[in-house]
Image 1 (cartoon, rainbow, N blue to C red):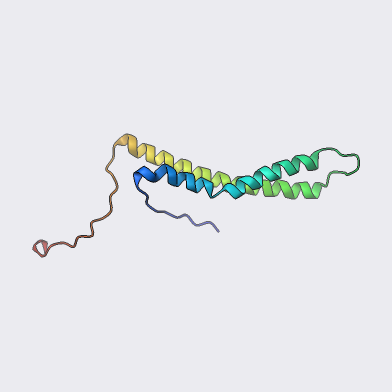
Image 2 (cartoon, one colour; image 1 turned 90 degrees about the vertical axis):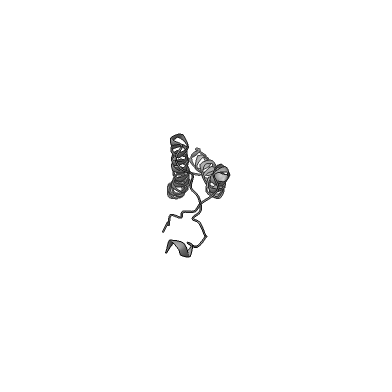
Length: 108
C-alpha cells in the first residue's frame, strides 16, 4: 500500500529535494533497463533455443510494474513543480513557520 507523505523544505532547496525524490527510484530505473535488455535477448530468435513465452510474459509484467513505479514518482515531482511555478508566478505569500512566541498577557 502506498501512503502519500507531505513535508516542507526551504524554497531554495526545492529542486535539490525533487532531484533526491527522483533519485530514490534509481533502482527501479536500473531494473527497467535490465529488463529491457533481457526481454530483447529472450525475444531474439535462436535456432538452439525457442522463446520461453512464460518467462517473457513475467519479465514484461515486471517491466510494467517498474514503469508504473517510476511514472508515479515522476507524476508527483511534476505536480510539485507545477504547483511551485504557479505559486511563484502568482507572487503569492511566502509560506512561513508559525510563530513560537506565546501571546502576551495584554491580549487576553
